[in-house]
Length: 503
Image (tube, rainbow, N blue to C red; front, side):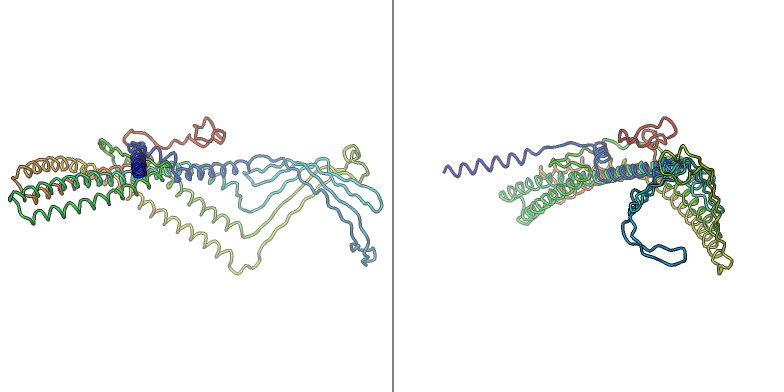
């Protein structure tokens, strides 16, 4: 007996623990906020934003001077090696020596002309361990210039492309967050729809149980038939099955939403539907203007044009190649001490070199290369024109769809009010014995469909609204621009801050 009581108490405790699951109430705004903070898609957008920021910093750093220390320490040889003799023969002799060199230089690229200028000082040391002596040679100071001729200047094109690419990445970050908001809206209403289905299923289960008991009582006093009693029993079983399936659907949708917004704890979500659908007008011309000013795609069009123009210039520059290098400075003779490099009699020295490669016969390669580049440019223009048409059509459809959905919400809300009132009246008349079970079933079905239709209309409205936000990067409800060109990533605080000046 004690064991039975103990098992019973344990069962009651477990049931109480299960029923005490934490409940969390969330509105649509709460879910969107959590998704933008915690979802994997939001974190991926942040990572891509940070990557684009550092890519741009790499480009900017290439325009700044570099202080470079180069060297070979050591280059040691201790082996028998072939040595060319004055008469042209070769003898293998034991060599035990080390050569080292070290240079310190300041290097700067001039992006306007693709010229590299370097100011450097270098030292070389030679150690012969067989004969036990050490020699030094160095250039205390020297300047060198390297200039590609008739070639593509990559810095000239980078100055046009890289700032645009960075600006595009900032806009894309805002769009990615808006995509996250759209997904959050969809998952919110998916769960809300299933919660409403569960609520309807539980109500129907309770109502069918009551109806079955009423029909049983009427059958006992002879005011109804057995087939109606059997019908109510079948409908009760169907309602119980639907309620069970609705519970499973709620659990599945709840898990999907929790995983997306980053709620790892096992909580029961209770969603509060939006109390209203704000009413405001959106003009197509206004939406298109915001899209053209803010969307990353319109910068992508500019980047595509610049890229193919660069490819045309690259094809033109490949006709021939020439490089001019020159250097001037002071260099020392071979000396036995390190300080003699800087205190000895150094002589000035200079070098000039011009290398070139000019094809005499190329088999039509250059002409074909130019034609290929020009056709690629034409193809890109055709693609951009079609993308512009498609995007403008997408904006037009979104604006028109939003306006139609707003009207549907009013209809769905009014239909829900009528269906609920009709069901209350029909249910009262059924209990009074004035209508049969078929009329009550029709009224209940109409009521359930109207509730689902209203939730579906709300979902379509908020889906359409956040789609327009994404397409334009503009909040029409609050008259607020979602994209701020002055905002950018700050690695010191690992957050987005407003830029105070040119970076």
